[in-house]
Length: 326
Picture 1 (cartoon, rainbow, N blue to C red):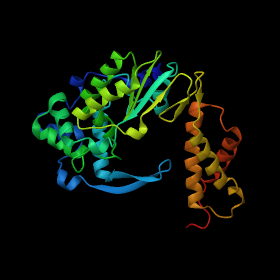
Picture 2: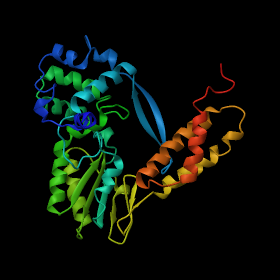
Picture 3: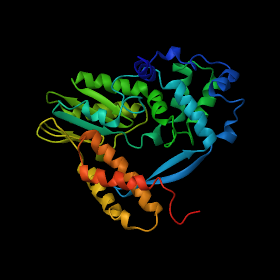
Picture 4: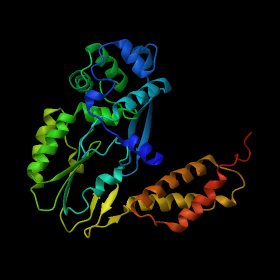
């Protein structure tokens, strides 16, 4: 009974008017909710810039990493908003939902259209965030400004912040609801994972016309389509949806790119037991490989049995104190 109640508590949802931030009109109350004595956003809001290589396209992705103090406040804010009711078709930033679930939702629909929003975070303007807090959360303008300051940077929503996924959705939820209603008019199922939109149907539909109408909606909110990432799959094609392959006979498959990463990383560490000292890069590769194996097993539980056995055997050794270090 205890486990059931704890599990239920983790996933409960309530109306936005039940959120502790709702109708907050005093900065003192906001500080209390955020667990801070006072808050000077000019001193608080700082980020470290980093880059992540995107292997598929060979480009670097800019990431803004908040300072520890800012991140702690963002995490507290995330806790306050994460239980607000959101639509079932949203999969990003949702407790209990995994990115693969987004693809599984379309498993038995043979006609699929996938669309990415172009540079989504970069075009999420702080004014939409501010309007969310004022119009939807019903806070006072001064409280909304503080909340907007701690969730945006350089007038946009930064990547790398704990709050970014949910704040981006709430700031543009009117836009996404319009897109969902449009999908219904085409008898399509719609799901959203950050900026990845997927539309599927059991019957053929006009993907060009649907794409054009989506483009009009996005343009109204100052967003656009990533033309290179618009893909339509007919019933005789395998579908690639947010890291999951749906085969034409309605089976789940591991993407070839993930399989290649696993084999490539395994080739780097397979002789690890022969090494006389611990290498930080090798340990990093082991941890990366462990995550990739888990991603594969979320699709196929029995995938890569021999590699899994070896990797977990090696990984046990990384818990020891590295040789040669004081």
